[in-house]
Length: 226
Ligand SMILES: [Zn+2]
Image (cartoon, rainbow, N blue to C red; front, side, top):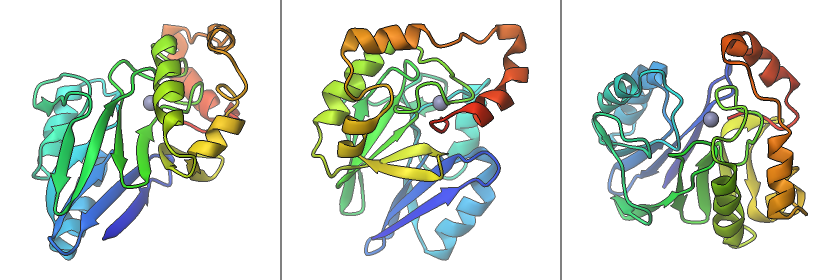
C-alpha cells in the first residue's frame, strides 16, 4: 500500500494518491490540473495504473474543461456535479482499485454536489468541514444539507476515523471524527437550529467584489480553507 499526500505550497490545496502496489493500481483524490505532468510522472515511477480520479467537489468556472484535462491522466473522473465527461456515481457506490475499494458518499452542503470518499479508516471529505474558509465558497451553498451530511453521516463514523481535508487548515490536513464532533467551531455543542442561525450570520460576499475579497477571506480565516 502506498499513500501519499500532495500539498500545493501556494494555495494550501491538498491531493492524495492511494495505491495498491501489489496489483499496481491507484486512485487520485482531488488532483489539480496544473499538477498533471507531475502526477503522470509519479504514476510512471511506481508503474501504477490509475483507475479513478475522485473529486470531492468543484468550483471550476468551466467544469467540463477541467474534467477533460484530468481525464488525460487516463482514468474516469468521478464527481458530484454533472458536467460533460464526468461520471456521477450513486450514493454508496463502491469503486475498486487493485484489492482495495473506496465507497462514495453524497455529502452535499459545502456545494450541492459534494462527495466524500471512504477508504479503510479514512474519509476524504474535501471542503465539508471548512464552513466559512473556502475562498471559492465562503458560505455553504446548502446549510441544511451540510448539517445532515456532517452530523448524521460523518459524525456517525467511529471516533477514530481519520478525516482528510481538501485544504490545509491551521497547518493541518487531518483530524478525527472525535475531534470534530467535540471541538468543531460550528458543529460541536450546537443544535441544528443554532448551526443554521450561525451560518445565516456569515457575511455574504458581494458578487462584484468577490475576487477582491478572496485574499482577505483566506488570511482572516481562523479555520482553514476549502
Ligand atoms: Zn470548496
